[in-house]
Image (cartoon, rainbow, N blue to C red; front, side, top):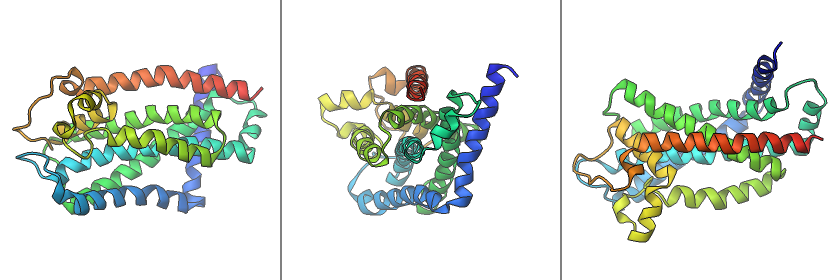
Length: 267
């Protein structure tokens, strides 16, 4: 078996091991799925009446793509927490003693978390439909939007994989991730229109990858206002291309860093 083939097989085994936790510890899945539902209901019914997304689109249709983007970013913390938990329990030490690809440990972890994100998106989409969200684009455009969300979530999970290896403590990861991810998601157009931000902060929001991910999903789902002004920033005029560029950049930088750090830790 070649090195690449062995890595693929080992990655599949590790991913399957992580997914079996859904059956053996269903509380994990419940915790993952409850949070998106709470955010949808909270913003739709509590803050929805106070925010005007512009003419031609309801706030609930404006909101749901932003909730999608926020959830997949927050879901990446599950990757770091899972790696840190395995390190604390000594499970990764057992993996290191086996004749397996070391990179497969992190690759399997990030791959299995894609399934969690799929389940979260399904639950959020159903909840969104119940509160009034509708898809006005084509089936292919909607599928492209969900695919873009999953690809972005996979990239961010590698950032958290590096954090999980550097800080092998679940408590520290949860607190540190909240400090970083909360501003990243709220200083974006996920919940409020871009025009509501003051000029200096608006430039930051325009180049925030969460903003471009949200904008790309709104355009693909058909949840944009026909009268909305087009931002001057290239990132917002080409949200799909910019988001994919960020995905490639994150993977190129953080995947090798996470794997290299894990290998140094295993020595």
